[in-house]
Length: 283
Length: 315
Image (cartoon, rainbow over all chains, first blue to last red; front, side, top):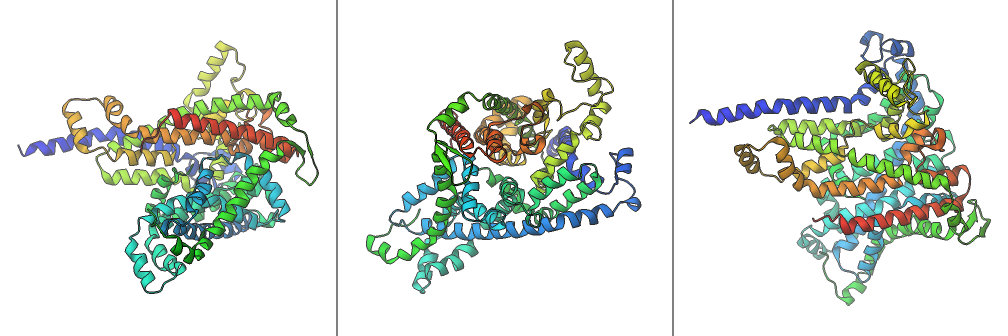
């Protein structure tokens, strides 16, 4: 009798091997772009032509690709970090405040205002980009990073507001009442109750907002003209156009462009994985 | 739920409105105003500046006879059908990861699957563009190495496509007839991390008892999928399907970056969104671009309506 569970366990393990193999095979192809990027970034064009597939000896790695890539793409990364951090912070701050408004009391008109936000979730924004360009031109925001920040903050409101309202409504009401008893105003309640208690959800939303800004290229492509202002997206597009043949340098630049996301990923792996699952509810 | 509040108290709490005003203003200015402006300007001959001329329905009449717009709708329809099939690998991977006995491996596979997400989307796109390069690109090397090239050359000989010739590298993005196949091939093996994670979340609700019972009954792996797993993640699959269809119709970043703003050689990669972009920012026909935007808008909205009606998501 006692041998029975061990046998089943063994058979399960055995049956898992084909699955592991299949998953690894798929992962190998899935991660191929990543692998190619890393290993080509250490090659010059001659080595790449001779040996496109395998990493070269670390002693012969062409580090000049990396210094070159850093010089090329460093300023774009600085711009993008500025845009992404500002956009993420302001987006979440405004969304938390607005979510508090909807979650705390049923104020007069609050359901009308709520629909005004939520309708935007269903409305495709595809036609917006053309008039948006004209609007930014009229506001004198063409060729500024502020245009990207302000549009990013505005577009981010609906989804973040939607998630945060539900979250804040689930916080215990007693906390707010106790704080009110102690004479805390609404702003203090947001700062001292809502924000400390929503750490993980704010973290998740922040990662999503950061990723979205980091990957944005259409709006920057349309409105940025000066090379000093380029964000990563536009910078990479110009890089793709200009240096078609220097693959090692391009791949090094690509890798450098990924480093900030890799750092975030390493520190917040769990939030990252959860954030991506949550991200799908945003239409 | 939010607490109810009496009229008197609400008036006393008037400052609360300041909490929502910034978001509201932003949304009004940068979402509602452009949308209204798009409707308004679709009836104008407008180059983006101050001068414009009311031309009634002319932009829409022009769109009706615009063969580029029509063929772009055909292209996007083909891409939608292809993208629906491209959902299969993600479902497959999610089910496989879920069936693993080891929780630790399940976690680590999840982490490994997320790795492509930490590379900026644009970088992945450009690496794929490099893969497609006829001479240096990885794709042609793989084709040669695995003998797929010979197979294609053989098929070409039978059907007389004149596309795949012995000794000549396949010109993925520069041969008009290969553009749509390239767009479909793009992203192979088509694992969408978000999809996999969402399916896994759905699969988690299956208790191990069900699997054990199925094992006892000698149910095969495929039958388990059909009878146990698929019905449970149907909600998630429908959700992903809706998001995917909408994203495909309005998306044009991929085409813009892989093929350029005119949709590549022969304009074969032209999709409606890209045509709108092209008309506005290349040709300066902002009014006409707004009209194309409106057509797309109505198209997507009615599709969303149909999907909500017939493809129900029960939560």
